[in-house]
Image 1 (tube, helix red, strand yellow):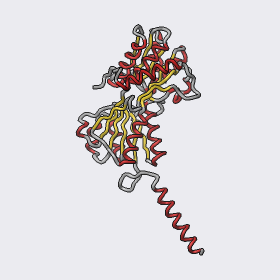
Image 2: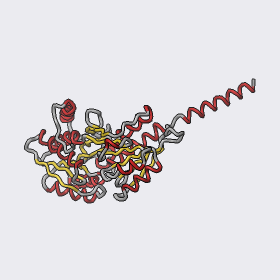
Image 3: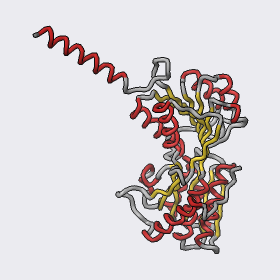
Image 4: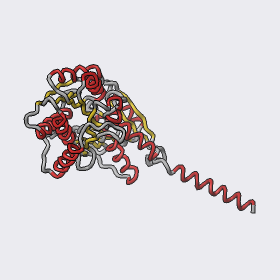
Length: 336
């Protein structure tokens, strides 16, 4: 009898061991799947880069994926991509600066690449590369609508990190939405020419406020935290970007009225989740994550957040979002 019980216990332990090893996904060679998130600047921006890391952390939690992170600090982008490719199954470069991705992808054909927010040159010939772009113009239309509705001065603004196709895609949507709400609204903009300088962001925001802007949209990563500081100091409203910044930057909850949420982390998570669960990889293409698929939206914080925007305006925003999804409203874009 004792011998039988002992054998049953051993058998149960073996089953438990198999169950535990089944919790994490391997790379097809019996090794743990490794994903590297490579950002052009640094984490801690409370928006774009941190959203990417949030998606990666959820993969680690849900699938046992091994996550590595690399901060380029605005230099050696190709070198860091190569480093990541040598030690990872999937590399996720975050930022336009990784334009040399075609060269690296060809050097490492067995490594998969997910380039966030950009389209690689010659993508059709890169089977191990998936590019994710976002319809940020659609969400920015809603942000502009809200800004115009909330403005008392008749002037709203936007601070961009730098002038490029992606940032300008935010701005054209923002301007169009503001004019949709109020044809007489004035929209003023400037560029900080950096994503990592809150002091510069504050300076840019105050310059726009001096032109009359009483609602300012920040589209500048960590630099945008300076926009919030300026709003706190000078007493105007701000709109966040990428993450729900009423939550990620709660110290500015009274100044941030909403955020144009761009689900960077979720898009990374869902792409790798599909690869894990379905062993499905669709490279050599560009995927545009938009409002219709749920990757672009307006966020108002959580139940503990201050709500400056009325329910009536929120209902209008929801109705307009439906019209964008249906095609009744076509939002301007700088994307090809």
